Length: 567
Image 1: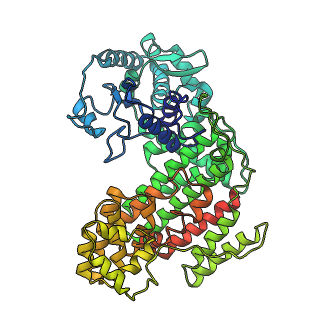
Image 2 (image 1 turned 180 degrees about the vertical axis):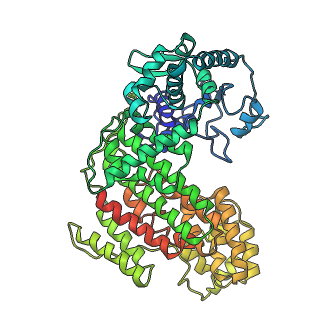
Image 3 (image 1 turned 135 degrees about the vertical axis):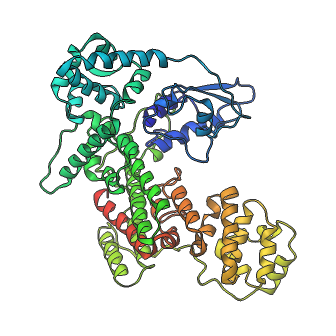
């Protein structure tokens, strides 16, 4: 499991001053903290650090990020050794090098003898002896199929509950011929597992693992829906199913609606009964968000995109609310030198963002009309009524070029025209709306030429500033330049310039910006996620570009519903 590997790796850096978090609360924060340590810890006089990632083919719920070389954020004094067993997706090193997006210039391949032949012979001998063992052999095979499907050592009770494996199948394994029993380790803690990964992989190659995993997913989702039903009550969950249901879902990719069951009060309550429940639940919520982001990028209609955006915003708001309740970001930071301890959360603790929630709903209501506005305004009124103190809620400003003055300042226009290369961008380095107003006196082709002379991060604001003054036919071209510059040089300071360009933005760029930023700025707090720089209200133009007004209603619905659940 990815989070298990990340916790081990983070533990190697706990004495580091550069560990970014006192208590990482999600796989993302674990990754960011590790990446910071790998980038910042090593001084010139320090020896080169070797990090060994052993057995990458055993990753149960992880794939390298497309388009990004694996482990590319490390500092220049770090080297990596990655081992891949022959039982992985491919035994060819060239395939794995391509999978990790490494190049021949930056990596070397070492070929070492493996266990493939011995494992293949052992599994074949076991299958041969079981085939001649009648009912005992068939029952033992079923048990071995379940163990090949399991993502961790599993107890007898969990084999029976999570895999619906009869007790007779487990007993049959104990009575099976010796070659079959030799494949399995029955540990002192009562759990079962294959003796090594090569044996497990060879057995799985001839088993119907997909249908077994589908059964695990179906049973888990059925239990969740039963717990959510009005007559449902507390359920006793097999420990294996809580820990690994999300991973099996990631591997089997069920419908998006199924993933959203992992972001429900019932699933949170289940995880809260277990050690490390916060990180476990947030990991599953991130699985759901990833599935929703995949759905957004593959959607072909506006209603499909609106539905996916509703799920993405819900996942972001739930995670933000839980992190606000956990509160370690605002507490003492003196535990960095101690071993990593998974955080806990008191769900009765308020998030402290009730006013921001109400302000966000008021703001989003102001962007709508008709019955949609009435619905969101009703949620805003409900949130306002729950505030401890009265006071006017002023809608937050939303990035937009509407209302930008069209009258030119002759002196400023002259200075812009006379600007040296890159100076044009420096003159427009203020707030995006002021920069846009300053360009009112420029002719379209002149504005494009001056913006094109700008380099680096200033190129983002320069092209954004001229967008409202261009004819419609040229706006798309200018916004494409904005996005190219943003992906190469942009930062949070340029984000509102980018968001103001939303009405003319390509859909794939709009989706990328939202998925990249929303809820992914670890230094921001929950209030900022709702109404701050790069928060949900800032993203209203992008939500409308992708999913129309329905996407804004969906975001407001997520804020209101999660506010009742996690106030």
